[in-house]
Image: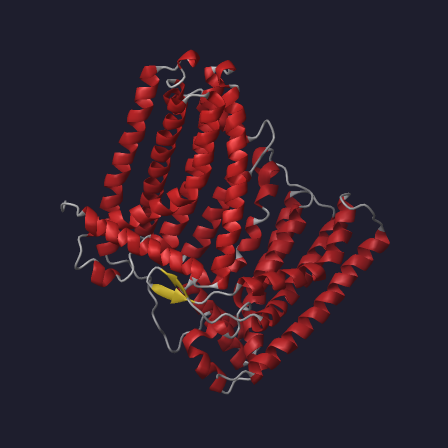
Length: 534
């Protein structure tokens, strides 16, 4: 192992942090996110400080078991949150250095790795500074024991560092798996979306007293995992902390940090210097793909080619279709009863259908012009009408999206024992919204286009704007609202109901979908056909 150069690593870390800062202040969106984040962080820190002060005043009358439980909850939540965020960032954006070819041939990779991980830890500690300060001040003033405040600071910083290094290591392990496995490389988008949804579902799955999360926390509080609390208990002699348990906990934390650091270096060398496997893409000029067999002689050639181009781009740059998966994360909280009790909530088929409809429109049509990136001049000058172009984008989203939405609604509805009439109303509402969604998204995309790229690893991709996504969801929500209310009336969760409401609500959604879809398509096609480069 090459001897580390702390100065060189520090310069790399400062450069990475400077880039993060510039990203925030160089755009209106970044400034808004920065301002909103500071406000939320201040409010959150105030609540933490008040809770810590109240807890500190009652500390002397608290049992050691309660202190261990609270410590386990707080540190476990902190480590879990940091790990989830850093893991995602490592896999998607921060797992490789910028300008890797030049940097890794002139600077030892160990210095680069320390700089990148140091920058990530710097971001984590920056966000943690205000809440941690509030926690320390509150618990110190409440208990009157400065030594307790110092123990809280040291323990929190060690756990945060371990979570950052450990999750960065896990992210490199994922990247190595993608680089070595052709199957994972081909299907990384779907696998990543499923993994993220499962993690999020596991984190928010329940909130009641019998939830899996609290059961696990109670078990953890009675195991050696809770010995970290004894580090804090030792600073309050009256509570009777166990020195041996505290010493074992401290040694375990530092030992885990050392192991994670060594593993991180081992993985970084293999990820950064290894040649990733390339899934076979054999070109056959005479071959016919599945989409060729499905669409040939049924869809105009121009429309088919645009749809196939969209699918191919999504396969090569999965990050561009990230908004298609976002709606499914919003229904994770409804999976509680499915996981814990084995029952399907009555409204889950409807929620799945609406999420599928939203994802159908968000996949390919949210940025018709900006999504063409560098080939936009060629697209505009080709013998391709605006209607044919938008039709291809709509087809790219509607063909897989409507099919998947129908299968999900029917599958979940049957699994939950939904009545045929309710299932039919749910299916009609979801499919009406799904059919109209791509055209509505296309209209939102031409109103709020985005041409600037986002760097993902060593590649730059263009993703739709948040304004386009938000306006699209607003219109789609209006379209689906009547059918949604009508379906909920059958489930007993709406204040009114009856056959007339059901028929009228579903019919209104079908009518709104037809009108909004047609108007959105015509508007988007007209704007694309008349668009000129400056």
